[in-house]
Length: 478
Ligand code: NAD
View 1 (cartoon, rainbow, N blue to C red):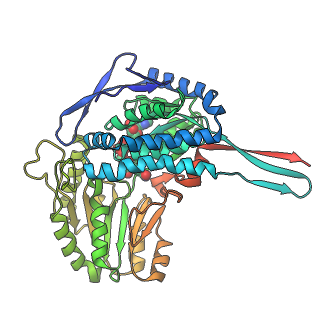
View 2 (view 1 turned 90 degrees about the horizontal axis):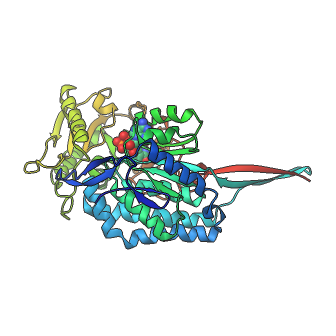
View 3 (view 1 turned 60 degrees about the vertical axis):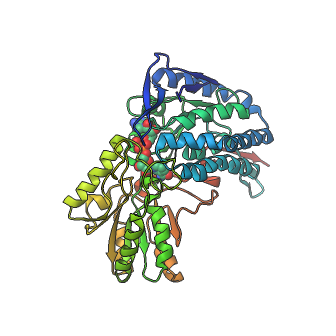
């Protein structure tokens, strides 16, 4: 599939006809070309989005807006098989995951925010007998939505649905490595009745290119960004010139704390997922595993045995658990951390290699490392691959201190059957999302996001809505 930009309701090439190649990470074969946007295309897209702010989208009734948003979700479900296939070709993730998580959740994001919009209100206060205040909610304006490659459609729709629900228009910059489902989404929005110019998509790269131009553009009022912490810092500088509103979902180095009183079989079943699902390329993956010393040996024995049974390979094979990493560059980066782990004194208990017979894709065995000190780079830095470290601990105080000893603060998973300890420890972990005896269980009404250098702001329910709306307080003297 070739991917064109989608600007003002039309699919188009770049003005200078520039393109780049899209490659399947599971076999290194070419999937097609992608239009490479730059300043001209971003200017066109922002102008279209700005104009559309005053067009039919601003006059539509709430009921009609709900119907359009709901219809986008419906069409995603109607085209679920096609979208899941494209997502797997683009990312290298198992088709079972695209079909059961990515695409249904993308549809649900629209259904959820369509429902949510019906119940949304504002505040009103009476100031003694002098005045009455009430707030009105309006769109922020033109919003830039910038996305990563790991959950392409799921994360894009997690931004786009509330952005539209709040009445904004937008310019989307999909990840350059995964442009296909975003392109189809342009078509779906049009089919669902989104007016021209409300949703625009410009493909291309980040630094010194389409992404950077979008974050500096004077007519863009807000940027919702998901990606690396280092990119977030660069975008903040660019956006500061026009003081744009920012929402950030950034990197993580998430801990799993496992106390000996927990049910180890249940822990291991979930830890297999939290470690290796989507090749470990999920921001929520728990890559630092801390196990209470009395359960450490048993945990490791069972965890390693199960990990060795994981099937790495063809993403389209239903038996596959772990697909391909996203790109050669990322493969090199992840494997460099495995080499570093050995240099830092670690021992690889399983994995660490490209599996035999899989020379043509970026495949890597799920990898478990032990024996590393808490200050090692492998324990401190985000790897974003199927690589975890396991460290024993002796006391609650000690593990809380270790868990918090990082500049990240996205999520954590805590395992214990002691109710008091669960409350006590959860309240001390510096993370935006803390799961107790589970992982990645999501209710879209709840706040989602990270503290410290893992993010700014929260997404989900009212939190998404607050980011995508401006409130004006109207004070009337009585
Ligand atoms: P990335 O930061 O390299 O790229 C993300 C997007 O930003 C891409 O579309 C890219 O083109 C664009 N970009 C890059 N530089 C830019 C610039 N200077 N100006 C404007 N845009 C720019 O991230 P990635 O490698 O695509 O994704 C992996 C990262 O995303 C990991 O750190 C992961 O933890 C994080 N992530 C976080 C969450 C979350 O919810 N917190 C979810 C998914 C991924």
